[in-house]
Image 1: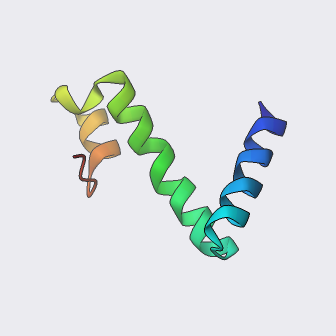
Image 2: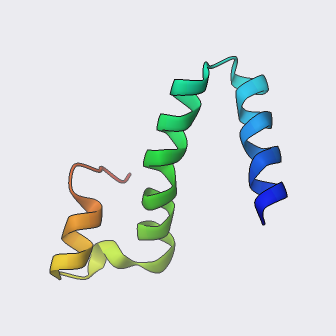
Length: 59
């Protein structure tokens, strides 16, 4: 998993032309977002899911 994640980060960095900070921010916001959406957590009204989803918008 570690190697795959590293390759993904390098790909995004190169393909987007974004700087390290932008790529880091994208992953930092994107990973919880994907977790919330893929598990359906945004449909659960509980303190933990509200904490994870605070400030995120899903379309």
